[in-house]
Image (cartoon, rainbow, N blue to C red; front, side):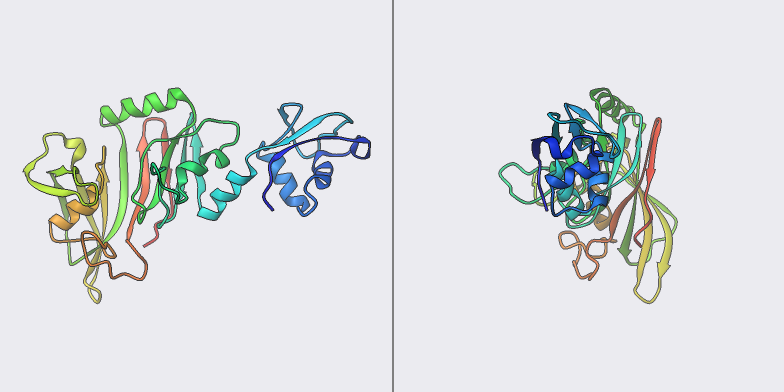
Length: 275
């Protein structure tokens, strides 16, 4: 059941709880769903969000908002992880596009944000490759968006990724190579050093699987470029397991790269590691 629209309370609904009155308009819905719609601010009475127990009166106009977007977000597997001070973090599964692609018709996280944050104006602040899972950062106010851009310019944002890579890697490695992103399909790693340290990739070895000859690593970036971690790791001889573009793409679990944590002034979000 997917619906959004408005209706008026008639004599049969006069004095009823809002979650009960909604049944006349959403006959195939359960009480739990109707209560959730109210709790999430998606049901307005005369222009104001009301809770499930609100008593409606004859002639009042009830509006159900953005149920379609809410359903879309759930279908895509998007979940709100953290919300604080004008920012929110959303967990995106692998195989879902982050941003709207001009001219494209595939579903994406950006188009579903309105359903996760009803009555607000969420703005996507970072992107992940379609195959990459993990945290997307969202600004809920114009001030938060401006603050994010300032933090990024100041190098005050730390984005931590987990990756399972081919081969054995020990210790800590920092990859400083400049990236050429002009070819939208594949990023090229250049021999020269990037003078902007925000564009470097720090790699810390966490463990090694001798049987599979793979290593689990944590990668740190501050102001990432397209495919930065994937290209940098492949350039030092350790492509990510399951990477079809920079490696062999032979993992049944897909690309084993997860944006697992983000730290910046006044905001931190973290999700459970996938591997």
